[in-house]
Image 1: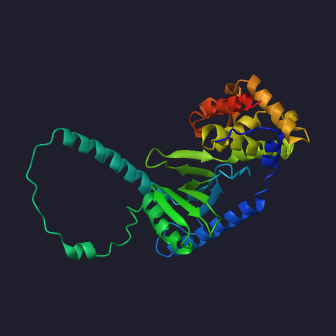
Image 2: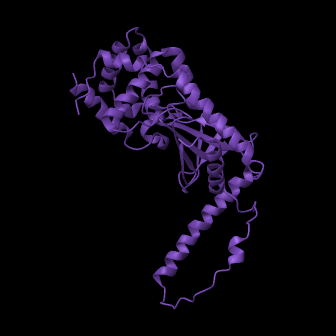
Image 3: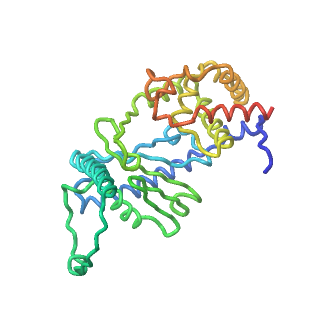
Length: 317
């Protein structure tokens, strides 16, 4: 594989990429498919309707710094206290059950298993909706089955715990990847599980405010730099950066360094600035009271990935 040449031509080309029409098409299609699916599922499941859901972009889709390697990552927040209560209770049950099974397995005695005939009648019986046991993971599965009805045969949809993944072709565009995390939503706060772990909370207010202010003060070059850094980070690390991490890094760069008409000059100035500064002193866009290393939402090893990217740029000169 030939070495990537990081020069003025490449940086200008990345910055000039215009994917607004494509972005709008994908977002419109996602909203359309989800709206139809939720409306249909809501006829059977009282815990979900178009009146109690919020669809929120979560990664670089939020800032508009989408590149060819981006996944369209959304949170689908559901405002329903009973569903949340059921889910928390279910998680606690399985957590306690695992403990009991571990103890039982450690002190088990060999016993002869008795064969039991299957009750075909009970297996064939229809299970009614139980509102006291229905949880977030049941809803994700039912939503998965419903969304399939509104996708063409060329799209692929899969499920993992409370995540839905869609790879579109005719529906969204060739190789377009959609990631939807089903979670809870209440008073501007999203609460979600990663798998079946501890419930986390996230509020977008500070991040949205920081991005809005930076776009206003630094202009279009801020989003262009996000795109450039996302592409180069992916090239250096073979994965996209945590969007909130990269937003935080470039948010902390002084506004005056963005004040150039030539985007390559902006790129060189910001790279030099980051090489001279310790990003440990940078603040997170999620909470300006937190440093980057203090914010768990920024992911792991992101600083290492950034340094690897900066070394790749330096070695390219």
